[in-house]
Image: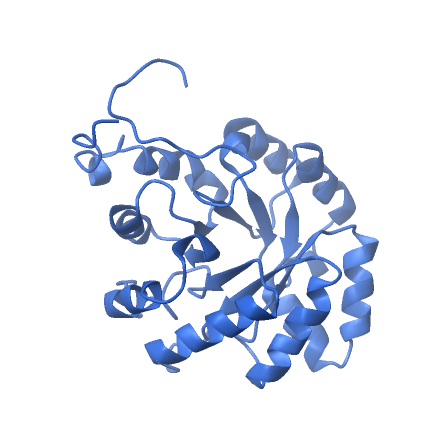
Length: 255
């Protein structure tokens, strides 16, 4: 940091498994990636190429290499996995991961109907090839999954070999963990945390108010995802209590 301030919460450092921040790249140019890394590289743990944007992204290999050269892994959004799966192209998807030398993959069923045992089979299969992130929750705002089902699915997916599970919110933060207004489904989150260790969960939280809520609940080193590239510095100041929304939260921790 550029100078010393007292009572700043300790932040984990890379490579980390808590305080993890996942970026949502929805189509950055190579120049924008370079700028993103220059400004926020210390805070970027992994980058997701949102949904199936990798299908239409120009100079994809060069883009992946930019992130890789900065020590930042990337992965394709779960919707791309679903797009291959629903077209009976799972083997093609696995070859795609090897072609681009990816070490992470996301398994999800937010846009398709998939038997959960079958989803766990795919997790077990891909976990032999890459590190798997599995996403729980639906992209359909009308589909409300009860808390016990979230817990059951998260646990089974972790048991199947997922490194971490992702709580679904989409890039807008208006489904899954959140109501269509963006408000956190507080009871759902609190119930999940009674059974699933917090360091095994990445909470998709694209909106500032959502990030603030999770930081106040779980501290500076909560795992957060679907963060826009231009929001990384802002999020880091929230984590450190250096923005009005969390300004008083860490002052009396004696750190």
